[in-house]
Image (tube, rainbow, N blue to C red; front, top):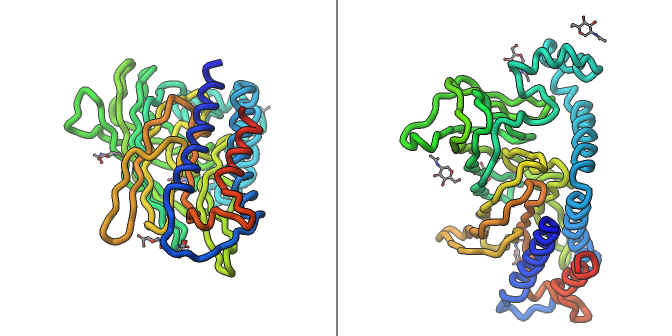
Length: 344
Ligand SMILES: *[C@@H]1O[C@H](CO)[C@@H](O)[C@H](O)[C@H]1NC(C)=O
Ligand SMILES: *[C@@H]1O[C@H](CO)[C@@H](O)[C@H](O)[C@H]1NC(C)=O
Ligand SMILES: *[C@@H]1O[C@H](CO)[C@@H](O)[C@H](O)[C@H]1NC(C)=O
Ligand SMILES: *[C@@H]1O[C@H](CO)[C@@H](O)[C@H](O)[C@H]1NC(C)=O
Ligand SMILES: CC(=O)N[C@H]1CO[C@H](CO)[C@@H](O)[C@@H]1O
């Protein structure tokens, strides 16, 4: 099956990435460092979990997608009720629609596509260019995403997922008129459905392609969802790493996106971070640039067409020396053996 082949390839690409970055960069200091095997296993397992969950998700595609979406929406509704309390009117409307008053909700949906459980099927993303700067010293990141999408049905609204992201700038371009940005009537975050809505002055037309540029920033939370941080102790020193867990619906916590499995697109990711850290993603590094101030930007090559929850990256501080355990077992070998047990 095509998709499963892709999943194999990606698993392999990721593990090759690991192997490369772990083995290729020897340190000059001959310090003998031992690694807590629990750390190594823990990290391996978190990456493994991602792979396994995505593999399951692909196998059970449609049903899984429906179940997890509704589960997560139920939970998010409960979580966001506090934030919503500030807005009496929208809160009561939202509750009404959740109570199963379908006719009431449907009559509103005509003009307000952001109230749907699913994204309106009016736009289809094709490619994402995602640039992130990761600040490990204060656990924040800022990013810019450029999404190329096709209009399927005429609409004035761009509705895409965001959660916990602070959106700054938004620019929309039509491919036919590259020079000027389209006028935006209003834009807002609609938390009950974890979407960001951009209402344009003029409708977008079917079969045309458009581009949207969004800049945003957010915290790297200490929680196993989205783009989150974790830590371990090495030689009595606490070290941090930041990794992703996007399955099933958490990519929206890392960048604005059409975060439903049916919206498959290609992704090009670049990660900027301090040079004491390394970064990994689904694909190999295509180019790497360093600034004089000790920051590195890794540009990863374009992924195959895939769903958002399949994207993964990590910013960590493993080096070759650290990767060798007491018994001389190399981290990449452990990772490899995990992959081979699950995937091959
Ligand atoms: C709350 O209501 C005000 C005015 O009615 C509106 O401007 C604002 O966007 C609403 N906020 C949310 C979160 O719905
Ligand atoms: C649904 O909403 C309509 C209009 O707001 C109301 O008249 C009706 O009683 C509601 N039905 C249920 C089952 O709540
Ligand atoms: C985090 O650090 C970066 C770089 O030092 C800075 O640009 C950013 O504003 C900081 N963010 C917060 C929330 O302090
Ligand atoms: C990364 O590891 C190196 C040694 O391998 C260490 O000197 C450096 O302080 C670490 N950086 C961070 C941010 O933990
Ligand atoms: C006009 C503008 O800001 N364009 C940017 C959109 O995003 C891409 C990639 O993130 C940038 O390369 C463009 O410069």
